[in-house]
Each structure stands twice: as structure tokens, then as C-alpha cells.
Amino acid sequence: MKRPAGIIAAIALSVMCVNIHGQELYGEIAFDGLFDNREFKGDMLPQTIYGMRLMPKIGLNQGPHEFSLGVSKVWEFGSNDCIEPDLILYYKYRSRSWNTLFGAIPRSELQRQLPDAFLYDSIAFFDPTIGGTVIQYHGSLLQTEIYCNWFSRQSYTNREAFRIVWDGFIGNGMFGGGWFVAMTHFANTMEHNHALYEKFQFNPHLSFDISKGGETDFKLKANAGLLYSMVHCRATDFWYTPMGFLGDIQVGWKRFDIKSTVFAGAPQQPYLNDPEAGLKFHRSDPFYNHSFYNKTELGIIFINDRNVLLGFRWNLHFTPDTPIHNQQLITLKYRIGAFKSLHK
Image (cartoon, rainbow, N blue to C red):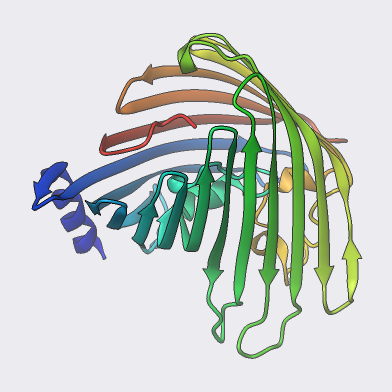
């Protein structure tokens, strides 16, 4: 797969914007660098993730129709494990208010990225595509989308597993409200010798935002809502229904910001330590399996221009009965070609 990745990258560089008989052929290259040093304590696994991800893509536009082809390749430095490239291949239909996408779709096409309580950032980095269908609506007051991500096909060794997500936001000023809803189905292999798990997650929240002048000037943002889960194992036919408060506040000025996220309530991952389920089933940050969790982030942006975003974050994680968890995070994003804004 190394040769196709190089070919697509070369083509993407050479056809940034070419017009062929009314059809637009474009190229895009996304490069992400990551250094993530996690000095975690207690039941949290300490580790360092150091690597990069390359996502070259070419596409053809014709009116409302778009067809895109590319690959996503991750290199983790110092690892002897071979991480196979993921194919990017999808069709997109655009209208004034609706988008419909089908195929292997980059997560960057989503209107809203899932928070850590729904999707662990490590999984998002190593698995940056959605296999399935995305339907989006974007209006002046309402933005919403629903999608199905089929992330594991059933075989004799792999389970059948998929997640359906519905998210949205209402508002276009200082006040607003939104939601994340997800259903995860973690079924059997072809041998049918495993328990079947299901999980429903709900996060309705209210938002407050008085940011001014874009991402480099003053900003003040806050969200507050509920995090509620329904987790089921068919082997025991028992439903866990943990609920808690989830909120965050972020204050920033120019290139500096401070963000604090708080969760307080019942642990959200009852089968996290079950070898039958674990992180492969929950797919969310293990910190949310505590009755209280606070994440305080101190961030600075070193470079912020049209193509490059380079930043550093020092994250402090607080959980009951453990020393402070410490994390240093350096991220580099480089984009060239027809691309969306780096800031969501």
C-alpha cells in the first residue's frame, strides 16, 4: 500500500485545481504530527504516542456531485507494528441545505467532532475515517447530522460492530444548545462464542459563547449538560444506567487559552475491564469511568496561518484518590489544497 499512497500524494500536489470540461479536479494533502506524553497514575495507563499521519486525497467536482479518492497512513515512531493504510473513497452530494456522503469518509467532513466522553482521541487519531453513510443539514439556526460508522466487519476473529451517531446544534448567537446521541452495537464473531453488548449515550447541553475576532483574539465559551448512558450485556440481560453532569469552560486571549472540563456522576464504562468488551466496545476516554473527573488544559499556539497550525497543551487530569495525572501534547497540522478551516 505504500506505492498507492505515494502516487495519490504526487497526483494531489500536481492537480490542486484543474478545470476539465466543466469538471473541477482538485488535490488536498493533510499532514498531522503528534507527540503525546501521558504520565498517568493509578488505574490509567501511562504511555507516549509519537507519530504522524498523512492523508492525501484527490477529488472530482461536477455541480452538486463530488467523488474523492485517497488514503490515510499512520506511522508511530519506534513501533515494529505495521499499521495498514486506510482507504479514503466516498461520494458526496451537496445541496443548499443538505449533504449526503457514502463510503470511507474522513472525520474532518463531520459538522461536529465527538467529545472525549464519546470517542477517545487516540482512536480518532489512528482511525480517522468513517465507514458508512453521513447525512447533514445546515441552516441558519440549526445544524444537524446523523451517520453510521461500521468499524468492524464480522469474521471468525472479528466482531460485527457499528455506531450510529446523531448530533446537532441550535443557535447562531451568544446562547445556544446542542446534543450528541450515540448507539454502539458490539455483536458476535461468526463462531458466536462471545457476549453481545449495546450502549446508548446521550449528552444534551446548553452553550454560551462571546468569542470575538476569530480564533486569535478574546474568547469565552461554556457548555453545561447531562451525560447519560444505557449499557447492556445480553449474557446477563442487565442494564446499567449511569448519569452525571458534564460541562466545560474555555477562556482565551490571542494565542493562549485555558479550558476546564468537569464530569461528576456515575462511572460511564461498566465493562471497561471486561476482556469481552473493554475499550474496543466503549471507544471513549477511560477517565470517564470515574465518579469525578476534571481536565484542565493550558494551551499556546506557536504558528497559526492558512496552512499550518502548531500548538502545545499541558493537560492536568484530576480523579479521586490518585495523584495528578500529567500530560504534554504537541500537535502539528499542515494542509495544502482545497481544504476546510483547521478550526472548528
